Image 1 (cartoon, rainbow, N blue to C red):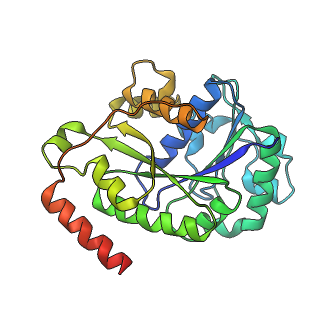
Image 2: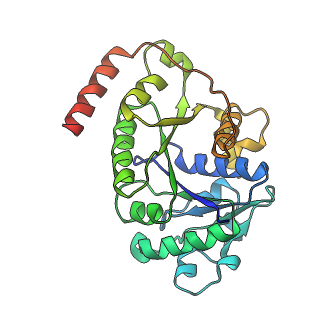
Length: 269
């Protein structure tokens, strides 16, 4: 039985997509499944840094699809998470160095040996996006409670549907409960009302993410990390477990909410 390939995307850069990929992948692996992380951001790789594997790269994704390296030799096993491996992106090539067909074949090969294949999709909607989604069975959309990020997430959801990936799931990152209560930040309910997709998880804004990233260790390995705990819940849901979500709601943030409605109507009109 082959594994499941999940592309993790956002549209907008800077929303914590790569950090989410690393932490969800590590949480899955810590629970037992074999997990491969694929950095599809050719030319701008960062997943290796978040995982603390930057000094162990010999071969990369482009080397594999070009036939200059075997897949098993390009995969890097994580030092502290036994079931977690990384296929790094090429740092000195352009995104068009790989075609969607090549990416699909690569992901199919990985699915034979891994229970989960998580694909870290580059920001934007061009060639890198097409490559990343080519082999995916499912999609996770990461956004933050900012209007620009939500608008980009909405566009990405439409593009995922056009690529044949139905029912993407939402991760809302960097939530600040105090700002929601003051009506200074869009609530999770606001986002769900307009994006119209299922909620996979809500991750609080947490300094431990910066600390863990600088150390090259996923936050899920820090028992004190609030964000790490939520990423573990997200991983559990991906494995089919029924995990309760902490409600983060408030009345709509009036001016922001009104502007968001106008944007959505204009984009969809």
